[in-house]
Length: 148
Image (cartoon, rainbow, N blue to C red; front, side):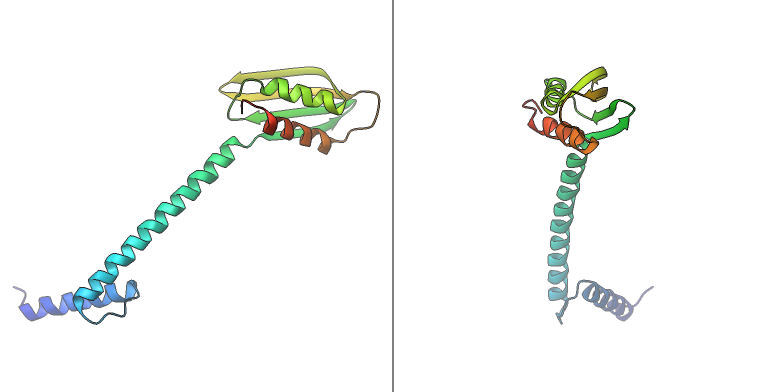
């Protein structure tokens, strides 16, 4: 059987550990426990805030389009992928191609849950276009798509 003094010693030791973990400067047991309670409440708030930030970051990453543009023999190979398919997205991208003077020679698009576009385009007569300009036009078309 454990004596009352031993129980008191163990309790005192555990309270001192709690005091050091919670950075409490309290001297009496009730104040140490109150500080620990406050410390736990602060930790819960920090966890909730971090969970919100993680959820926001995940949402932002999910909605970000993946756009790749490669220079090929007579033009560009354009690949677009998005987790979400929005009505009007393909039309918006094709209009952007037209605005920068890119003729689509061949295209394959799917919109079954996610949006995928693979297109081959060539410059129309006029100012030369670089791959970065094509990529930026696609990204801007996605941002400007009203149904996004």
